[in-house]
Image 1 (tube, helix red, strand yellow):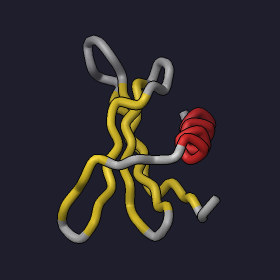
Image 2 (tube, helix red, strand yellow):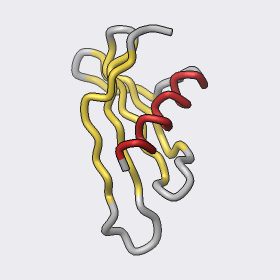
Image 3 (cartoon, helix red, strand yellow):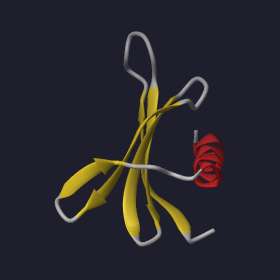
Length: 75
């Protein structure tokens, strides 16, 4: 697996219904953002940033699991 590093994380815990965690990370020399439900770490969305545009991103399952593990440690 390529180098993977979380560069920023936001925990939105002031919502009335669901709480979310967004992790920004670098993978394969690109910047990604992935948002999870805080309760079960289900993926809500994932984006890759290229130039000045963002696109829906496909993230391999092993990368998703690594991000989940790191998010779990940090929350």
